[in-house]
Image (cartoon, rainbow, N blue to C red; front, side):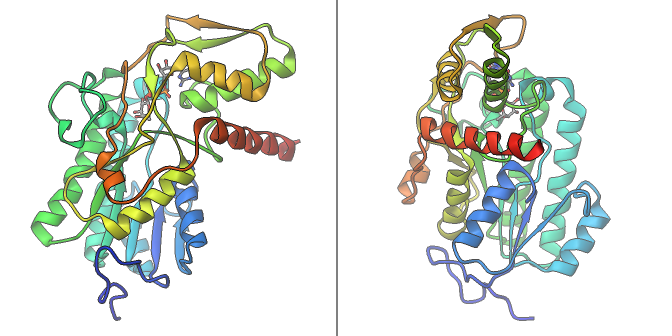
Length: 325
Ligand code: GFB
């Protein structure tokens, strides 16, 4: 079989008929990546539901890659969750993610995948890293304890990519997105991330006429929020323009205190009651604003502002509620 990337070079568009496997294509990130690739003209985007192929299973993963033979792989498959889920289930966040990554990278290498993008998270950086956080602050300090297991797994993923580059000359890369949100998010009140959790809490409070909504922590931690459609566009840009062992940050370059996010979400869903803070819940990292200058220098920038992204995500949430009735 001829290699679809044989005549391709970094800086040029990837051939639109190259087969791309998006691992995790039914999740928040993977679904956005698959959508974006198809919209960009890719004609052979392959996804797989974890119910059909469990990427934690090495044999199943190897068999699937052997049958599919993709030219490009995007690893958006992961066990993810918000601060409470990470803190409650460190075993699963560590082991599931280590297994998924090792199985995918090994199988991709065996079938000769030319381009691979592994996605991580901004929580790989030290809890008290200088802000905005540059890529070279990786492994310069202690991690945030609420998500250290997940962070260590993702750091191992970066090392996996770097090791395949070093030992086998693979032009594989890794990218570290900031906190993500968008259509298809997990709206579970206990396990999800802050943005979908607040959207659902404020929505339900408005519908039921509840006078208050409870926000976890002090409201002072700052977070940066990137819409998954922007992340998906960045993924394609990186596949076509980035070839370096260092992970690269993907973010919007600005952050907001959780208290401001809560007010924005309240406005979005038209909740007019009061916000109260439950300080028995953890704040987590005080701040994790990514330095995105490396990404900007490659000619990519985000296009979806937070207010706009909140509005469209809330519309998606409402559509889902309607569909479930
Ligand atoms: O989004 P989140 O769970 O994750 O929480 P992290 C961000 C901040 O929002 C924390 C506060 O300070 C939370 O205490 N918060 C307020 C809430 N109300 C809520 C709520 O109702 N639900 C949630 N979930 N938070 C995760 C990591 O960290 O972010 C992962 O644990 C990963 O490893 C992910 O990196 C992107 O930003 O603190």
